[in-house]
Image (cartoon, one colour):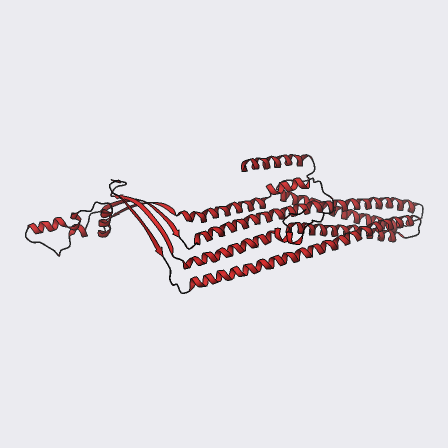
Length: 456
């Protein structure tokens, strides 16, 4: 299933790349690309996969461990030499000096006090031991279970972190597209103004020739023309910067996009649903689960620990020599219980409980903080909506006033300075409107991100 999904994503990205080379990239296409190609999202995915391995590591402690141990030694140390022979099942009475004692005994001079030479001064002895050992915990005071639950919660937090990265990149891609749309719209309006100025420039030249205007009028028109051209150049440069940023987000070259409408639709959702789906709250809840299991781990210090082991081994003075004859086994169990350690375990348990209570308080605080942020954003959006509505009307009025003053200038009823002032007000309204629309869109995207993108 995963392989099929991977092939599908590859084919989608490949086809989208071909489309990008031939026509404008749409927002929906860009969102699909950023999910699969963005490097930060890929990094978050690797972090998630790594955390899953931590779960396997913690669960593996339930099953114990099997070790193969191969020892090789050569010694003339009396204790080791005799011990190696005994382990290899090759010790004999000669090792105790029996031959020396019997020789003295037969000679009628039994010696009970002289240390036997063979036992205290053995020849060099080689020792090979092959051992297979299995150790398994039987009861750890729920410590292993606690660590497994902690690793699962940490993995879930990594998953939520990955989704946060995805939501952040979606937010940035959307904002880039809508910023581009606003820039294009403002540039289009400025080009209209530039055309009007060029028409006014031609008219002014004609009026100068006929003696109805002064050269200073033409200079004012040309100065305003240069100002508008400079603004258009700035906006075009900003568009290039947005293309560079979008290429960075999508991890591939982008030089043509199809922008959506300049206004983002307000999401429809209840505040409680936003808080429920907020990733920061979900991560805080996972953090609370981690703290709860840390209490469980701390309590394990008050329980006895029990474990079992089994091993089989064979030893000889050569590698695997007479392995079957020299084999041996050992099985056993151990229980240990720390009864007193200066109150350290109790202090650690109390600290874990306090951290759990602290985290619980932080979760409540986070919920209230998110609720406050949602209220603030919604209020800001309403304010921007009213401001946009007002500015749109003011822009319409500014256009009409400019047209009126341009006509009155032709009739020599107002000066060129008056016309330029009205045109400046017209440009100012365009830039103000773009700025407010930009802020309003950013706030809507921010609300979507807080809601985990669940509501569109």
